[in-house]
Length: 441
Image 1 (cartoon, rainbow, N blue to C red):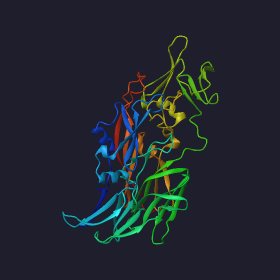
Image 2: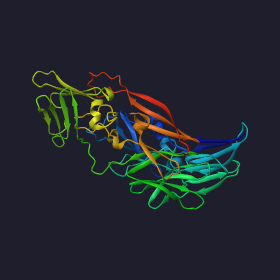
Image 3: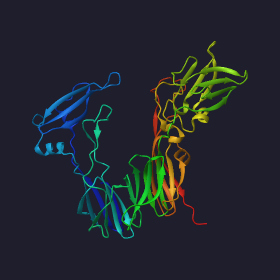
Image 4: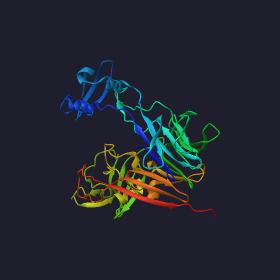
């Protein structure tokens, strides 16, 4: 079941069905997966399947592959199973069931792989799309850098289904493309208006448009430098959304700034691209590093993870501690929540922390009463969360919006004396927030 709608005693339920083929389980059952390997991808032919297996532990970062050709006959596949294997299109369907009691009757089926809808002023409205819930089918990658996965989607374009009683439905197509952009996700408001996010083909902007009685989608707002708006929610009080920013041009991990603690000053980008520890009492350089793209140099230790991370500078002559900078201290240079990837590695030759930990890459929460004028706030400031990979969903009411934050946060209980890169632990977060919408002045 992908959606359920009610109005009084009347209920409409949307159910997704599709055919899939679990080749990996079949091969495991037949003992055809080599020891120490896993199925990477496969390609069907007229009479056989070519399957590529990879070692579980690749050498020098490049996987060692084994190619095996298996006929449908030796796998014992039926003609129906072969048809599923060879079919390049999904047979995903949304089936609608409706009724006003405990028994719901089938009222129609439509091509699509997901549905979202609501009861509107004129009846039920369902939006069908061709993106979600259809499992990816592993295929031969197009090149050596490919992930080896091509998504299988439904046959049909997005559509808008409407019904006054939940039993007789009208289907109207929604254009998937317009003005060198593609429709991404859609929601419907109480008037039956469809609100959609559209992404430019070059990925440089995202817009929000409405589908009303005028026919072609009408743009209400456009955002440069945004690669995705997801989720988008709409209600009587307006719209709520989460925006995901692009990496700015010529952006660098390098940071410039100074942090003072216990008689020392840590200077980033002094010299350019490097780090200097300045002795404030002696007014002289204590340590200088021409680059921070090195493993922790002699006399520098990094311990702990997340909030417990510490950057420790030691006296090279006697080995005692000069000064320790905590994750919170380093926020003055790197921004709030910069440490959420676990071990930040302030000195490192490896990209073991993603760009997403920096403030300019954190998602933004947006709100608008009409879809044209928007107010934005960073997800960190809006919800006081530093969780890594936090997922936000909204419900918009008459004069309020509710947000659910789900994700993971690094446990602050990691011992400070830990030097193990792999000891970081995560804990789930599941928090609710409510914001009241002020009335007219």
